[in-house]
Length: 489
Image (cartoon, rainbow, N blue to C red; front, side, top):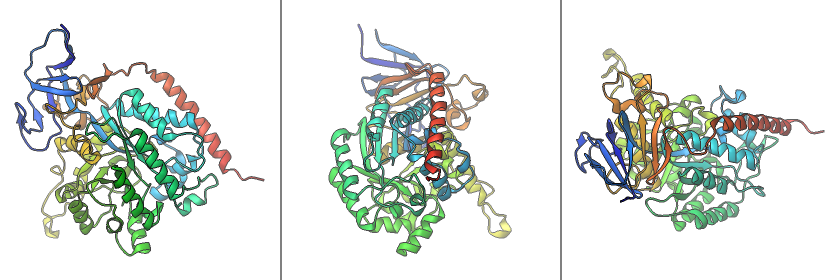
């Protein structure tokens, strides 16, 4: 007798992604489950507990492994996977870095290099235990000779990933873009909205366990569209039944621009133009006033927290505990590899854990100056970070059937081995993937009940071949960018 089930046996620890202290024995709401077994039937989790094998079912031995929900990455720029460590932009803050690296190379991408970059980024994420990827793709321009949206969906499907296309773009350019010789022309609003409608009709799945979603995502509200166009885009998205996403308040320049142009704050500006709500999430939200935090929480607007990119660009550290306490849904995104040379969810989770503690500790003052705490080790627990990066991501994306390990939920889960010396000696093995740093090997990764990684290998992937292709592509991009920048006679 054969059954369409998979039994994951004898896990050392299971973190569920749920909110609330304690450990569940059955279908409780604990952050951890005693397990030690988990059964997958088709696409869903059937049971968690002490389970006996069934005749003919597939068994995955999880001895000396920990099980997490598969990570949900809510903000990426996959095309930047071929722009890591670009020397001209390596030590710049956000605004000059945009001109030095991503804008300098945008026109150098063709269909082949774009597809390769997407593949590299998705593979990097898969190897970290990520099952859902939301990519904020802004590589669009009038007359573009290839369909970057189709390529992203194709590459994600080939790996078995759940994919959310955040369709970026702009009807306006920043001054720094217009001064670049190879700058790409902006789209008209009709072109942008028309393509969002096309993509929604072709790809968007509204189901809570959807494998494909489309999101309307102009690159940034303060720079990419006029206020009237922002309002029109929000109304169009809601008519189409899709969500809204963008960058906001990554640096103090967002505050400066909102004050100078509109005499308000970035969050208040978004609220005035219908860009707040439970169907909206923003990347970064580093520089916020107390009133802005309250407004985000009151409207249920979410965040994609990107600690490594914010650190790399010197932007700061988002105040995640204050945002969550205000009611802001919290998720984690890796941002683009051009400002995060380790664009995977394990590195991002590790950084989120450490940097929230550092942020609180940085504010410690002696009692003589009114201080009331020594450090910040209570700012973020591993269980918090796992929840942000799994259930939190599913919530901001509206994928309600994904993100936690519970019977009835979709079986998106990562099984990590603890056989690396960095995990040896741990008194609490459950925290290893987040706390120990580095990439733990995957015993298996399941997405919608399908095994997409087993024994740390992706079927058909030759990493040496992929690395060689990447090196060649970097040289081609450098050559094309240099040609575009050269003065013409």
